[in-house]
Length: 343
Image 1 (cartoon, helix red, strand yellow):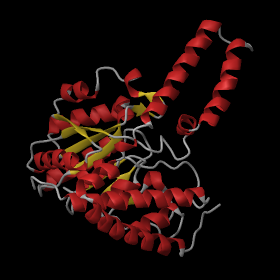
Image 2 (image 1 turned 90 degrees about the vertical axis):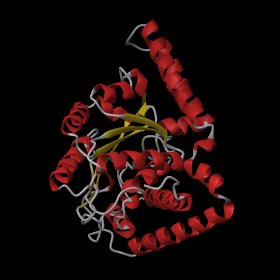
Image 3 (image 1 turned 180 degrees about the vertical axis):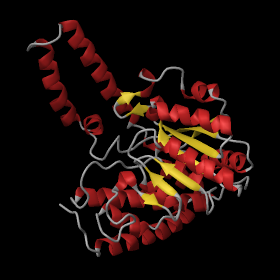
Image 4 (image 1 turned 120 degrees about the vertical axis):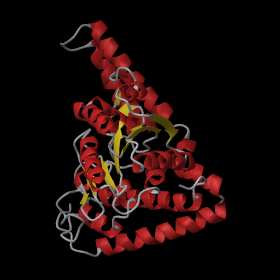
């Protein structure tokens, strides 16, 4: 395990992830991808930092923000684009969509069920343990998922059986549009520690710090010492899903006025709950909007901007060009193929 992360390689990987997500957003906005689209913009450093320590035979279990870890894990980018476009030549024949990607070749699986990456990773981890080849499994999930029973059961199972699993909790402090602390008792650290797992907190916007922490956790699992729980602080730049109305309201004063005015009018008129209840609900909603607005202010939280400053303009530009050319080629090839589902 290298003590000093290769920042250029990590930055190139982050750019690959970001450019794929931007391309997916473009396809979605053009109506070529239907349904909700959950992007991982803002999670690039966390994903790249973990992927840098995985090798062939290691397994990946992820949530419905699946394209970033799949791309970082070596899944063919064109096949991913084709899958999202509904093309028969896609990764899963155009049937899976972004929430249920599957790559048997890379031992990578995604699930749209909140919390499901944890038990799937335990299955991967048990298989790796029985084979005894030093392979590991990684699970990616959000902080809101820790309230799912299957995730807590998975932490317990992995701890008791000393499974080679790295649990990566992407903590953006939101569970969709609910502040996580308002629905999660005990805290993430105390929960995982209570089940016997070593817990490491890391700034998931700092790719070098992320790589170091992930490297130690993967090495710990690979040597047979059992699981680790990583609490990774991230910022989700696009909200819960592409076109998230909360993010729209938080960034557009006109939208904020348009949304708040009818709510204010509703407090004083119409049937329903009493005035104290209505005022309380309005106060909580206002607090949520203000929190979202404040969270969008410091754009320095963008992990690509942080890594670029550290790497230097010349090296960063070269990495960006390489990543951009690769993603552009894959996108052109995918769009030139037959699209079975499009608007």
